[in-house]
Amino acid sequence: MNTTRRDFLKLGLAASTALVPLPALAQGAGPRAVVVGGGFAGATCARALRHADPRITVTLVEANPTFTACPFSNAVIVGLRELSAQQFTYDRVTADGITLTRGMATAVDPHARTVTLADGTRLGYDRLVLAPGIDIRWGAVSGYDEAAAAQMPHAWQAGEQTLLLRRQLEAMDDGGLVVISAPANPFRCPPGPYERASLIAHYLKTKKPKSKLLVLDAKDTFSKQRLFQAAWAELYPGLLEWVPLSKGGNVTSVEPATRTLVTDFGRHKANVANVIPPQRAGRIADAAGVADRTGWCPIDPVTFESKLQPRIHVIGDAAIAGAMPKSAFAANSQAKTCAAAVAQLLTGGTPSTPKLINTCYSLVAPDYGISVAGVYQPSANGQLADVPGAGGVSPQDAPRATRAAEAVLAEAWFRTITTEVFG
Ligand SMILES: Cc1cc2nc3c(=O)[nH]c(=O)nc-3n(C[C@H](O)[C@H](O)[C@H](O)COP(=O)(O)OP(=O)(O)OC[C@H]3O[C@@H](n4cnc5c(N)ncnc54)[C@H](O)[C@@H]3O)c2cc1C
Image (cartoon, rainbow, N blue to C red; front, side, top):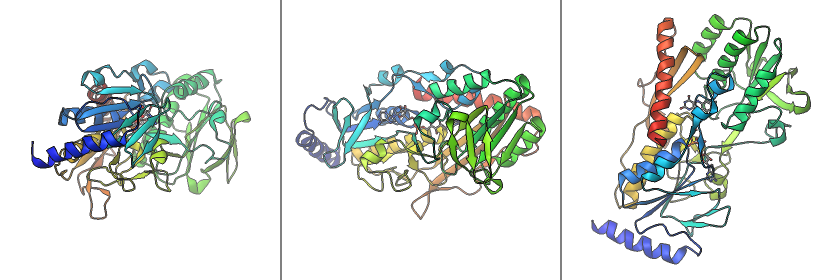
């Protein structure tokens, strides 16, 4: 052990004994990392921290007993997959020597370096990693509150909402109108609304062919747009209509009682309405003082340490990660970078400059996949920027065999990442 680390541990332990009020959970003798949120970002980070240095005691705070994954939940909505295939326990995470604390983190005291849970439990930390994912901005679309979501599901956090949208589609008569509203940037999973539109179009084409799907968009452009639109023209002509912002796509209010979506240009009464609303970082980010006025969390791109609060790191969807999209792949990549940096910082080392990666697959039909990939690095302006020439999208004119191969790769990616994070 070098002098810096020994001094740090002495100081850290002395400080923690003095600062953590009782009743604080006993968390072991090494430097203490607490991770809030056991999703793609948080569970990856907790495990990577233990692997980086087993002397670090790692506590993972997670509200739910099982994790329900969003990637592939669009396939659940249209009956191609069961929700159980999306659900993962924390058994293997705890087997790595991580202490799992079940509960909702409700407060952070950055000065005392404590996290408080809804039941009053307090945890002391030397470094805190927040990975809470997203919260819905209720009311940002006028009339869209939690009660409205029971009529017009968002299904943007997988679970009951996913099943509700599925049941509504199943119950709809042939000849019905399905409306999806997509939000302005930034939001979780940029290609997600268009994958969902594609799979719902596939469902309608095969099960309810007299029906129609309208996508009302608060943007004029979207991820993998040329690929999606070429596939829609080929697979779903006359069935799926996309209305961009400039043609009246921005939904300003909803009327849940009649499943009506209102834009500046008109009113659309749906049989099934899927409102994907504006979002923000999970609420603990606000409580910790790490979210800025955008609702998201500015971070240092080398360490993912908050630009607003020292010793608190933010990863996954909650972070402002520059050119990186809000995806499970990105969350996993950020978590490993952050864990390596936190392990260095806790033991007196210097974090090294990272390169991060992302690939997002989307299904346009069950046997038709497309993808976008990117590589990112910290730039001079303190953001994560694209490494020029390192990314790309699926070729525009690929044969169907290539699309089928990408659909298989998408499944393989999901199996690989969920095995790495939860298996
Ligand atoms: C329909 C859809 C399809 C998608 N498809 C893909 C895809 O194909 N590929 C891809 O890469 N990404 C995809 N995504 C995006 C992906 O799901 C997210 O980017 C990813 O889940 C972000 O990970 P996270 O860890 O930041 O958040 P989450 O995975 O949401 O995890 C957050 C966790 O924190 C917990 N939590 C939150 N607050 C607290 C608190 N205060 N106390 C305790 N626990 C808390 C939650 O319970 C949750 O378990 C998709 C998303 C959607 C909606």
